[in-house]
Image 1 (tube, helix red, strand yellow):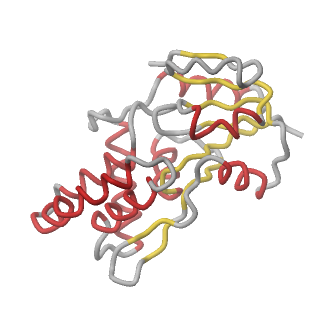
Image 2: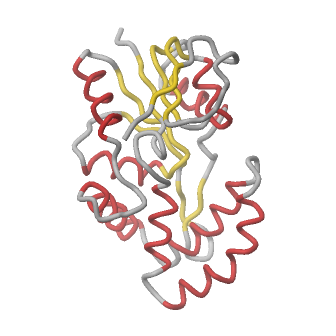
Length: 217
């Protein structure tokens, strides 16, 4: 059985928040959408400041960003955005070369690579497709809301990531785990033989055995 390696996506393999960057692009696509986002932003920010309630604020803005988009339009928008990341046209989000090489190394050595992210699963899949990375993806599922926008399902973070990983037949402990966020992802680090924190100033080495800090660019 192949050894399993888990990667977070945003700020681990990518330099920024892909969902946030996609939503900002959508807000700029029309005056009405921008106005609605501006009105909702103060309320959403209250939720975004809370780790436990952050998903509510994110879903509010996601609904506005995706309002009146059908499934085909969502897929096309995610694909176009992902190509722009690949081509270096999104200033706030780019691939870390070190992270990309780390994935390729594990694949070459025959390991099973899984991307486990809080970002929408469909968006994460398109980001990986754009750079021809054939790996498994676990993320937050999306569904069409009652009033024409898209909303997220169970937020794929913290213990939910572990549950989702186990649901596809992976048992603990996995070979390695990479993330930038100790607080959000300590469950996947605890369940890893080789846990890594990326570009982090966190001083939690004593909490997770064998935890290593890496600087990627």
